[in-house]
Length: 173
Image (cartoon, rainbow, N blue to C red; front, side):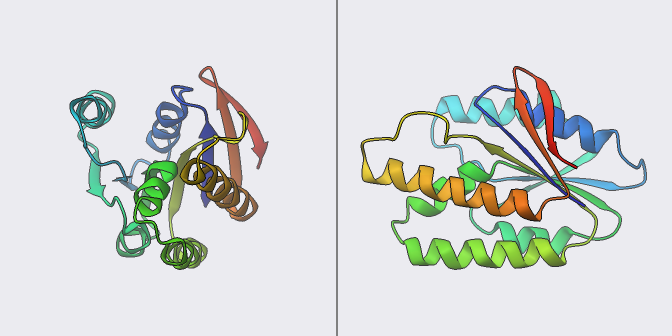
């Protein structure tokens, strides 16, 4: 089963996605695939909050800031529940390489892995397309690519949830 949790910054989407997996089958192995990198003290604190204050010992954490498809391929089994947090950070990591063709190949591989993956996968991502069109080229590229990514994943997903102010709106499923 593939699920997508999408919402704005600090909307509660990660917390709700974590609760969704924690409330699932007790015998499933819970895997958290993190895409963030700690580039400064503030981001280090955010990562620590997610890792140590929100998730208990029942989670295995895998760091995959770029190689997300490989991490899912290695860990997705019928008896796993995988939470990927967050797709827009993963996208940012790739766009900072300034190689759109590489990103598109990586994205397509990610889609293929998701289509074949066993078990439960819950994806978390930031909705960024509801604001004004950004002025900079990289910012516009980020909004365009995240919009494409979200549309494709929503079409593939069994369940899509929009989170606003900690409240779920089930859009699909």
